[in-house]
Image (cartoon, rainbow, N blue to C red):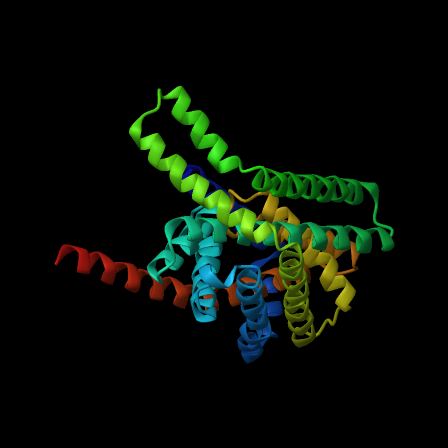
Length: 325
């Protein structure tokens, strides 16, 4: 998986570079330069989204298993940087977030369950925003070459999200480890894995037995996603070509779904840039400006992600040092 993710990152970066060269580096750089010091506003506009993710993640968790809000916010920040900047699959970011919860004192089964819940809420949010993006694209009377693939992608995402929810309610993790133990002839290690998976299933059932809280978490996540729309709107305004909020919502909805579908591609490099160029054409944006708008969000990812990676590596290095002494 790591090799595949690394290759995907290289190919994605290559595609992004090809797009920049194709449109002309000077033209793209000129559009980006119009942001000026305004680029430092983008992380501030985006910040409510990180806080909203942390709050929505913590909201459905039973009080007995609920770490402090700061623990969730720290895990979200680090997970964001891993997902966008490292050659690892998006699922690996959830593993990193679970590890951070364990380091903060959560039980392993609870941390794993919370990672699954976070992934579930994220999937619901992406499906809702994808449907909204497709609806806005249809209102723009886009050609079938863009509309129907977007509809198909949103439908697949919705079905996958529903299946993921059903699998959790059915206690799939315990079932898989129990089946594996039977195939392995009841090996001791499988017995331990099954006990942990069964504990994880119980935690997930406890969370799913509070559907209103889970629904509220999804609603919070969907609402705070609006910060990404605001970020695009601010960036376009600073670059001298204002866009409508509905245009930003369409871009965020559809491009977000594309990035989720290509989860093996770290940060959606290349895919996001191509999506902005194609969808920007429907909005009447020039390819140069659409590409520069995508790169503006990349600048924010770097400003938030690089410090997070440094904090994470420092903390992990300190943990390893304590184990060796």
